[in-house]
Image 1 (cartoon, rainbow, N blue to C red):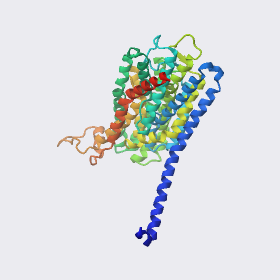
Image 2 (tube, helix red, strand yellow):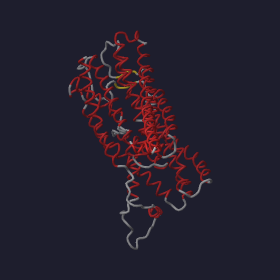
Image 3 (cartoon, one colour):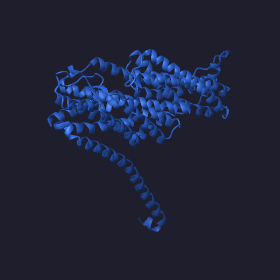
Image 4 (spheres, rainbow, N blue to C red):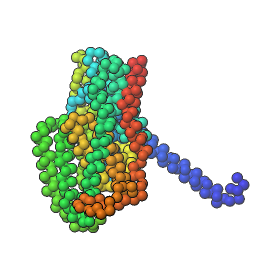
Length: 497
């Protein structure tokens, strides 16, 4: 204290530091309070609007209001967590800013949910349980409410912990746990659960393999050859056309399946036409761009920007069309039981207002909380650029197509994150100084060999952050049991009320 009195300037510096710390804490607090406050306002608005339709729902209006609020809460969490898998690579590749990614994703997610979200969904989500006559309507409503709230709480926790998880697996776990709590293990379709468990391994492995393979091709044929501009003029239009064909098939099989059920022949024709059109249009476009570029890797990177943005937008559209049911499927199931004397239906129609809750909730959750997971997927796992991010987007589409065709269970979340890991580990392998060297007298015979030789090898740096490998893998494995345990607990609590 005496020293501070003798040296006023030091006391002044300490005061400035103290004020600076207080100010930083204020801004951090504001950054948390404002999004949470807007979320609460959205949920309150949903509850008030649905409560205004009291006459429509009769005596069951309060159950519908609570279900609508839970559905909106689930949609907010889907936007905060799951959408990052589509837009993160574009941000990490410095192709889009966080705000630009949020705007594109919000528009495309909402459009996919409202235009192609479909009007029919299985009441018990993906066939996990079969209520039949063993569950009363009251128990079924509590089951759905428990599943919805448990899934939302788990995704919320995963977002706080910076772990991208599958929203489909979360709601499946919720339905599983609440179903067992309601009527025992006999209610569960264990065959379907086995397929879901298999997807924990299948999805990330396939995503990683395809992303790494595509990136290796780009490195060998385009980035690490002597004349990069000539190679880019030849191969980049082909890669763009491949992405167009993959996404045409992807949209036919997944994104638009609720409004257009294309046959295999139609999908083949549609994707073939997309390939031809994209190739014919991209060749002169790329040739014109190349005239202004130098023979440098960074210049070649920019050729992947436009297809990457288009791919991310289409992935968001398809995600909105498919995953909106994770937010509002249980809500629609509850609404279907209101005023019903026929019991629990096997399929239900999703009203437009229910779809709107899901669509706007996803968009709002993305805008308020999405930047955190976008940063994790796009920047913190491994360093991305345009070609690497392009490989992640293309891998997501190709993997879903192949898995769907073969009947393999996959998760789009696990595929995208697995693809990011695949890109990172490939970079580590190529830069490993212990890589096998050429034997004395061995000749390089092919262009590919020459290309491999030109790949630079630095000191053995780890280009993938291992802590994310462990934390994300752990989150994936425990998603179903964690959400199931939460749902069972909530179900018992609701039955006691």
